[in-house]
Image 1: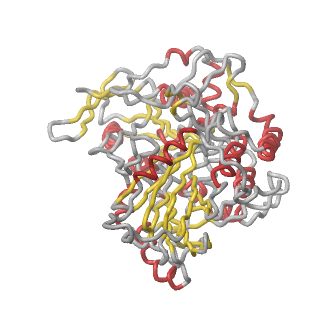
Image 2: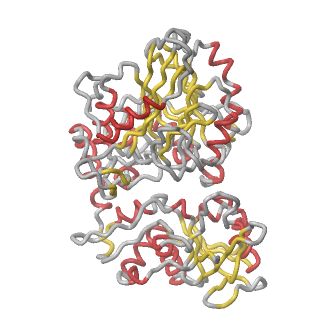
Image 3: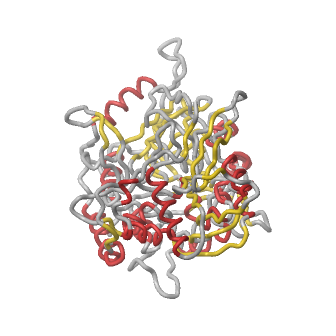
Length: 572
């Protein structure tokens, strides 16, 4: 497949949504106060830096649809979910967005692969890397999911090499862009294991893109995949590189990091104030040296355009459903005099899919059809990940936990199951004219985690549940629970969340008793900070999580309709 033309000059087509935002942002962009016509610095050049993050192998346009953002309908103005993403649409969007942007560049903030739908994952994510490489991407920060199969496997793909049995994607030659991670260090030598940065000339300006991976990677990746690796503080590492970057001639510094913030507001904030923005990305932005003109973030799957202490902090959501454009106006000495940003939605209704990428996706579909299309069950109702107050459990989380408990009970004794919400990557969408397939289930649980049964005391289980309750203003992320476990919680008089009324199979939790608990191997190793689970004893490994869900749905197709939230409830 030939590479996309760079900055091809043809009529620029954008959604009305993006055009309106650009006009508004231009009016709101930060610039020095002018006391006279000649006091404002002259704009010598303008750079457009496009970025994506957390693509996660979503090359397909549907089944599952990568993203469904709620946006105004182009015809009626009605706010409603609209299909977005798919690499063929992303390719067309990038062509059109970069048309007329003479001084533009395209980068990514990590997790381009890993936790991918079967269309990509069954082929070791090689089709995704091949496709993204055709989009004129110059570099990507390393994400934690790029390490799911270990650093050697990532390096193999990055170099375009094939394992002894051959590449899964015929003709695979690698992505053609480097992964950057200044803070990924050899645990023994302390030296970086990947490139720390690249310097690219954009519009006559030497721009350094400096990459960082979240230092919290050990809490979100299985230990065997990151043995021998150390993850240093992002801000400290990037700040220490500044003298080296300047010595190499870099005139503009851009941080590209796989860490971010959480944001409850719209994907675009013309004021850049972003009230309520929080998370590690904000802390890093506050500590990062002012020499960095722009911070491109990822990891949290949020779309936002914000400013922290006057500097842009941006993120493009996930799955290729958004593209961030950060526009920097520079004076003759390459100082930023104006910075604005907009998240462009990659709506399937706004772009014609690029034929070359349509063919690539179809080729991947043909190679994986036998596995993906295996039917599981005909369902009349689906399930969703979102929980609604006062409940902390979702129908999708309940379904997964119930399936894992049933799977374990068939193979021995078990009392309850817990599921980490971060491992639930999609809703269960039901279509009347076709059965649910293995591909649908893999989109929900793409990690192929092994199920582990372990013994915990009632006291340990109580500690586990208490520790995962929300703290301060942080949004709650409850472990999802099987039907055998129910509890309530409330905020106490001192503002501390307290566990209440924990019951297993209708009986109060007994601290002195032991219970058999089912979790996936990621959680069993203490993933997501659940260190109590490392204390579990008498461990027995079962099968793979997706097989448990498939077996349960096949055996109980009508049971999905019976699943309701209410197992976790907040008291007033």
